[in-house]
Length: 245
Image 1 (tube, rainbow, N blue to C red):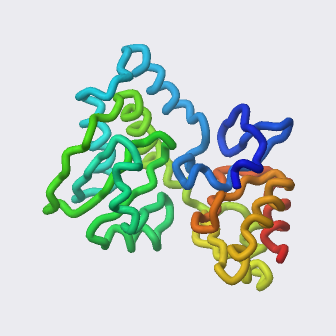
Image 2: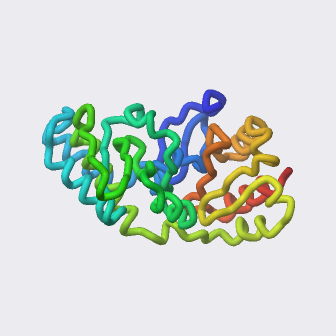
């Protein structure tokens, strides 16, 4: 479905630019860009690591720093870190932990193991499990460049819990209307398509939102994620789209 979307030439914050237009990103790479595109501190740490020539996937101190950030995010847990998401294909059925989603987070944390969505699109794949679980060695090491950026992204998320606040009055008001709740379910900053409503005609919704300047997830299996900011006009347009059948 993303093939129908204009070629993106640049991205910043929660907005995408391409085809002579600006789009509000409601997909945010499945949550991996939940802190926005091109976050300054993440870009800085990538540049600093690149200047040291640390591109190759070799043993590095960056791995320890990454695990330390995960320990702050998930105290009393163990972590299996993989070079890429394809390495965790066997874990696809595990619960997914999403940042700033209290109900889903609590369910995941009580599970035997789960997969977190980390706030950086290139972050290595991680499986979180109990402390008594045996850690599996990764098939290969992860580039320090990727680890440095992933570590900074996790720390930035921890430093900004206000990102999880739902602050858009017009969106809240839209969900007070029964026509909105027929198609969508609101949970914090996440909006889930209802199976008997919006999810049934997802391609139609994808095009309708795109034409109005918004990017939906390419699949109804993923939630919409409200951005960290919306202009008054963007908020009004999104509320109108959510109210439509």
